[in-house]
Image 1 (tube, rainbow, N blue to C red):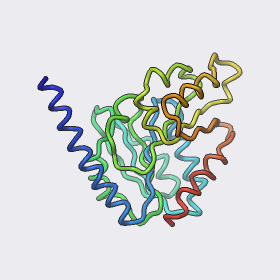
Image 2: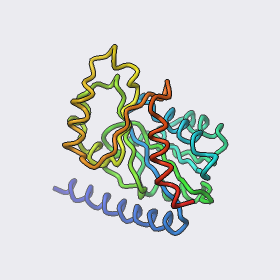
Image 3: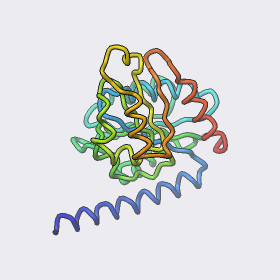
Length: 217
């Protein structure tokens, strides 16, 4: 019983800080995204291509969450946007306090703030980090059973990018089953079927995002 109470208090403190983040970003006219996925789903590649597609139209800042390395942050930094690294030292997710502290180091002279969360399909969904939209990436090699196995992650998704669809012909992945289960768990989530490797359907995602960010420019 005590363990449950502690967890509730932790989440209450997290939500209070998440609301402070929302108020801060809103006061500065910044639109924000939280990218989540399992490791290897193509999250950083999609972030890179999204920044490349939008950086001529919008000012973008980036916060990267990683266990111990700055490899993904260095990839994004090479694109010329302001980057801050959060190393969680083993924690499997970003929480609101980590993000709030990072906001004191990253440039907030931007229209769009992109946050890349630590890679897994469980913990990041539990911690509200005060963003406008949660973006979840599911890749074809992971298998078509993940939506029902990790419903909390997909329940918080505003957008789901089904990545690596170039592998549909060689892997046993039932795309219609996945889309049907997404409609059950997250009926309002926008779904894009993409291949970041081949640039397939990415323009649809970019155009959708541009319309969201335009009012913040």
